[in-house]
Image (cartoon, rainbow, N blue to C red):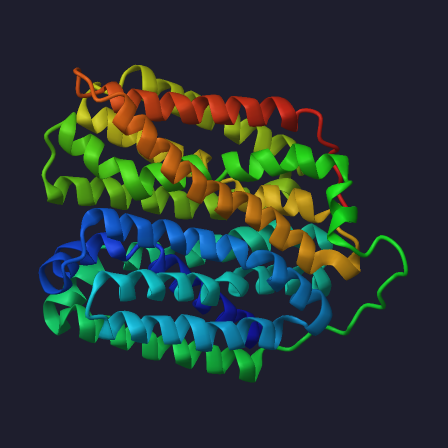
Length: 391
C-alpha cells in the first residue's frame, strides 16, 4: 500500500508540474508554433476546467471500482497521451487539446490517495497525510520553473516534454502495478447519491473555505507575482524568479504545517479559521500598500503562501462528513469546488486587471488583492457556522 501511495504522489507531482510548465515554455511555443499568450492562457484555463469537470465521474469510479485503475487508466491514456501530443504539436490547437487531455489524466491521482487515506488509515491521520501529499506534490510546481528552463536549454522543449510524457506513462504503469484497492464497502440502500452529500449543511459552509484556502495563493503565485514585481517594482526576470520561488516554497511549508494542525489543536476548524484570518491580513496589506519596498512585498507574498495553504486541512474537515461508501464522491466534490473555482477566478482576476488599468501602476494589483481579501472574509464568516466534526 505504501509503494502504491508513493506512486500516486509522484503522479501528483506531475500534476503540479503540468499546471505550471506553460509559463516557462511560452517563448519557445510562440517562436516555433506561433502560440500566442492568449492561446496559452486559454490552454491553461482549460486544464483547470478539465481537471475540475473530471472530478465527479472520478468520485463515482473511486466508490464503485477503487483507486487502482480509476487513476492508472486516465493517467496513461489522457495524461501520457496528452503529453505526447504536446511534444508533437505543430500548432496552438494541438497544445489546447493536449492540455485538456492532461487535465483529465491528472484529475484522479490526488483524490485516489485521499480515498486510500480515508478508508485505510485512522481518521485522525487524514489531515496530516493530506498535508504531506500536497506539500510533496507542490515540488512539481517548483520543478516547472528553473529546473524546466535548464532542461529546455539542454534538450529543447519537444525533447523535454517527450521525456515527461514517458515518465507519466511509467508512473501510470507503476500505479496499476502497486496500488491496492481497499476492501469494498457495502452500499447502503439510502443516502447513496451525490444529492445526499449536497444536503449536508456543513459542506456548503466548508466549500467556500476550500476555495479561499487555495485560490488566492495559487492564483497570485501562478499569474500575478511576475507582472506585479515587474510593473510596480521594476524587477527583472531573475528577481521575479526568486520571489516566485520563495512564495512557492512557503506554500510547500504551509501544507506541511496545516496537515497535523487538527491533531495538535484538537480541532479541525479553528486552525483553518485562524490561518485564514492571517491570510486575510496579508491580502489586505498587499492590496492597500502594493508599492511598499520590493523586499517587504516579497515577505508579505511568502507569508501569504504559508498561511494561505489550508487546502489539506479544510479537506480533512470536510472528509469527516462523508459516509464510508461515499468518500470518493465527497473528496472529489470538494476538489471540484477548489480547482473549478480557481479556474473561474483566473478569468475574474483577468477582468479586474483589465478593468483597473491605472495610473497608478499599482491599481490593477490592488484590485486583485482586495478582491481576494473579500473572498477570504466571506468564506471566514460562513465557516464560523460549520460544525467542528472530528469523525
